[in-house]
Amino acid sequence: MNKLAGYLKPYWKAALLAPLLMLFQVVTELLQPKLMADIVDNGIARGDLGYIMRIGSIMIGVTLIGVLGGFGCVFFSSIAAQSFGTDLRSDLYKKVQTFSFTELDRLQTASLITRLTNDILQVQNVVLTMLRILVRAPLLSIGGLIMAVAINPGLAMILLATVPVLVLALAFIIHKGFPLFARVQKGLDRVNTVMRENLSGVRVVKAFVRSDYEIRRFGTVNDEFTDVSIQAIRIVSIIMPVMLLVLNFSILAVIWFGGGRVDTGNMQVGEVMAFINYMTQILFALMIVGFMLMMVSRAKVSADRIGEVLDMETKIRDRENASALSIKSGRIDFDNVSFRYEGAGGEPVLRHITFTAMPGETVAVLGATGSGKSTLVNLIPRFYEPSEGRVLIDGIDVRDIRLDTLRRGIGMVLQESMLSSGTVRENIRWGRDNASDKEVEEAAKAAQAHEFIIKLPEGYDTLIGQRGVNLSGGQKQRIAIARAIIKKPAILILDDSTSAVDVATESRIQEALKTLMENSTRIVIAQRISTVLEADKILVLEDGQIAASGAHRELMQSSEVYRDIYHSQLGTEVA
Image 1: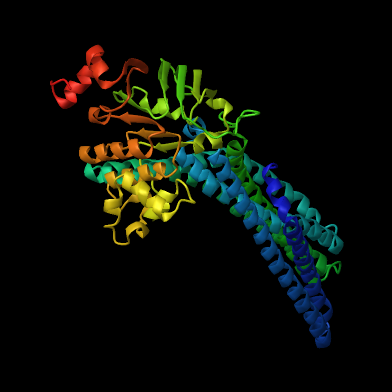
Image 2: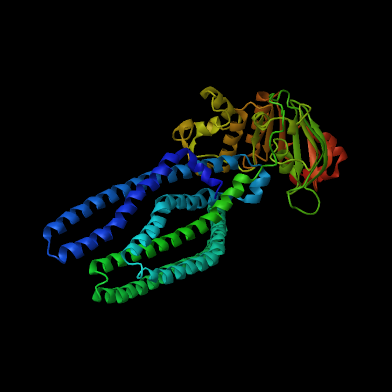
């Protein structure tokens, strides 16, 4: 929480004005019971209408000052709290953008969404509440106590019996409630996880008629979240009845003992009324403090979760004196590279990988599912770091190249074609935002996307739905390829990016890439053997190792694994 408080510094004026203006409202509230007592004892008791009107006018003026102070406090506290939340959310989002795949795997997407939304909202609400109550509650308590003692010190002894009871009750509730709030936020993470998986894969759910199963799965985590939330709320709800019980007994005691003092002439009726008002103010101020402490307890959990993200250092970052020179030729060397996912046991995913991809070459990576193909290409732009060995580009270890320079020189099309909401033109130009319309069309033509794009209702200006929902799988893949081509990268990585495209279209894409990107190094991951037949070099991965390497004809002669793959897909006739 202390670290996050620094986000209020740019808005210190608003953060300072809010409690100062609340001070005016507190002072007016403390004056009201005293003025009322004067009206009762000196105006009503004597039948002095002029006195009543005069003091009543003062009360109205005091009330207006309090209203203005309260309004100003709300206004400036809202500015400070909202700005605090905006900056914190922005920094947290920026921090997430720096994470490597390792940190993203550890934190998980659903949890990050919860931290960026609900957790920040919890902390923001506490900041807003504290700016409004930071002055109000303590001053009402202290000021009310002073005024009560000033009216009658003996009667004020009642507070010595009531305040400790309230403090002990609050301490007990906070002690019990804090662990529950941590469980509430984790429960919300689980709800978001299931909901995100279901909504992202809604077509699969419907295709397999698994709606009932998904409803039950969501119902389970939703019920668990509800149960722990109810437990937390139940603890918090104890505060109000305890407060009201203590308050009512306190008022009863004041009326009992105060009435006796009125009978003996030691107090006046107006003073008893004022004393009751001050006691009510004191106890309600303590109750507000109690609620604020509960909010702080819950926000502390959220602040810790936010702090975990802000404090997390990505393991993949620029070294000192890292090269800022752009990639020139695009030569790739894997030098005895092994890789193991963080925290994973057993054999490494990749073992002792060594190969070279020369500029202008097409290197295909073939292998069964889980053989490590995607992991291998993810090491090139440093999405992950090798556990052993080195990956070099143009003879330089990728760890000695600045990340922005490295990734700017690499065009990548991942297995899942992610498109953003916006036009087709904007999605293609996302690869290079200063590309001209002509370059956008050239990239689309190379990716065999131009033909279907011009048939869309608005052509290149057609809006794409979220995640490209209004496009087919093959169309999304071709737009994603165009987005990578328009970068004109020295290295182009296609990670099974034509799986939803027919063989004829895929062949035309490959021919276009050879012409348009003849000087670029091309790494192609494929499941179909037809995709790799024309590659300059084919790497056959098996159990994380290179089982064979060479051109198609070489492998047909030397590799039984490759021959088996070829025959299983294209028949027994040797090409």
